Image (cartoon, rainbow, N blue to C red; front, top):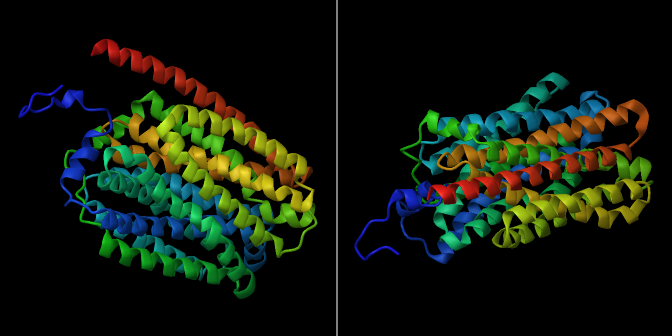
Length: 423
């Protein structure tokens, strides 16, 4: 209990919440309607990012034909973007930790608009790979900073749901943005898709300017304090779990188009349908993840990863079964999305005071999984094992992810006991 008029000791604050609380106090009080508009503006950026990130899988054949690559080579376009996220998320979060957060968000989305527009003009494989790498740089930093802004605007008991709401933009991209962009790419050329995403990025810039309040950066942030997060074992365990566990999802997602057409015997018109179901799975999984996080972040990670293993094995078994594969795709992405939100919350907590880099690391980790899954899937396809093989690769990655999640539970429990003893 704290006596009236007294000041709580900073040492009694929960790890990782100090700067979020301080940032919230520096923002004008928000009504529920204004908070909704701010989160909607942030989620629109997620919608733009999710559309361009995932539509490449649905247009992988059109991109390969347009640039003059094989399908496995076109898979490197997916990996180049993911590598950009891996590099950009911690780097830009580190450099921008002290900057006003609305200005940082505006700058990140402006860069995203520029590189998508440039991607639409690429004429050769090398240029496209470089531009997709550059386009990935703002991705993780945007989601990390947007999550922190959403959390600072919401009441403490709604932080998890506020972060999940930002992530819903990414999920809704797979329901509406990716199928629509895939259809656009099939009928107007893949370049039109990247141009359309540039337009979405411009819309995001306008919405953030109008509806997101001027949120300060963290004036106490220093390079040494931000990098200190990288010395914490729980941070690395959570990041590694995301990298390999989420890689299981992308091992199959990266090659969904040729899997259902060449192996499943369905026509090109089936590709947007499967991508739509992938998106619905992400929306449902993200919504459920926010509620599961209120129950237990650790148990949510365990349940989500174990379920993903089962779903990927079912995907392998039914990969050549045509439309019977459709419900399996729903569960693959729904369970994968449970990992995304809960890993975000776990890393924000595990990073302690280095919240900016902690929030951004999640997207580096997930895109390591993106690149790893796409690359390993391409390797087994190029080795002649067929389009069914990536699902087994994905299941193996998810098993390794579950092992890391369980190890993280042991470490988390030990650190909790150690902190209690110190107190």
